[in-house]
Length: 468
Image (tube, rainbow, N blue to C red; front, side, top):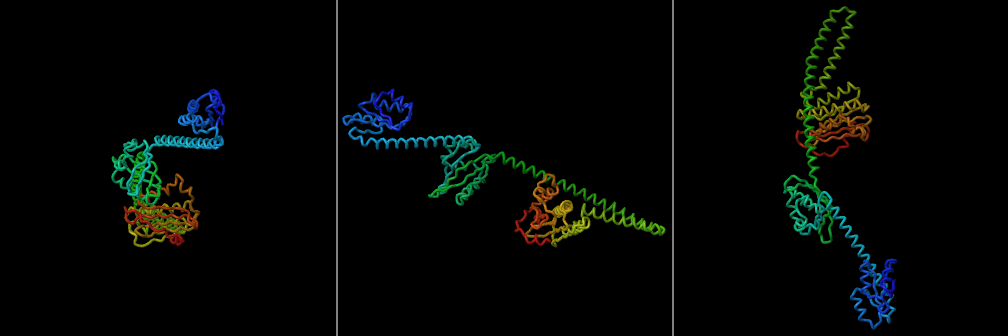
């Protein structure tokens, strides 16, 4: 505590060299006035309590000092109240200092928030919904002009200005999303277009509710036009790739059919003629050469069987003649004979599909069995084809080594990728993983009628367990 009974020079030196809690100014002993002391403190931006100590006869001067800004007056005949007065004023000065610090922190925080909000590539907002259902903005950042073409004060004056700039259809979705968020407390997540339909915006905010039932959203609305255009371009590119893939598959199937027809008709007929000629030749050969002729006939029989099998794999005529179930059963038999792996096929009767879907499912089964032969090291494969709830389900399961996550993500897993593409072209769903009891389990569902969506069905664990 500094006692002011000397000159102003001494006061300035004391203020410069130390920090003081309070200043006592003695009216009859100081070489300066209270007003001069107060001016010195204000010039240095110091909030130090100034307490006047005066004689009872100096009441007028003491009152003048209080009006000038002194904090308290203590008369010399009541010096017992000096210590409590000093404590009180020092405490009040501390409160004022805390209040100023809090205000400075608040101003700094507001400045940082406004700087951040103005630099964000979007609109920061605080939207309130009254219990009557009426909306209004408490706060809108400067991004409103860039994002919506509407000034801040216009949105704060009327929230309807915001809803008016939205496309009518998307505005309904936003109002519905706000209603749901207000009632459930879930995060508001909405995407929609402006009225011209050329710009997309995204709104995200978590609601809060006070005791009166007023709901408040504080969040950000950002321009997502670029990402939406990218998504649209990506979808178009995927559609074009799918169309190209479908065209290539169709061309491949036509070529397979032509080759299969040539093998069956041309090569098959030549082998039959060779067998006839070999049989005629054997009948005219001497006994010691007949065994050789019969060996040639056996080789021709094997060549004819191989020709028939290759022809069926290229383009199974049974698929057209008797349907998908018969073709898969025939393919399972051929697979078992050619690989030595036991292959059982279980197919529901009466499954009738359009030619493209039937062919796609047959090729998927063919590719899956080829993968089993190459990679699974299995001794048993079960193929299951069934109808359920408007879907056709195809399951293939083996008792081999299974399939790892790394195998699914290999960049050159063209077999699995081809299966997935075929299923997607049929609006189906596809799943492949290591089964619980070992081995790989492939399951896909496609709609029974082409062009429809796959109907959701409850996964039947019991069916998987019954496959073996």
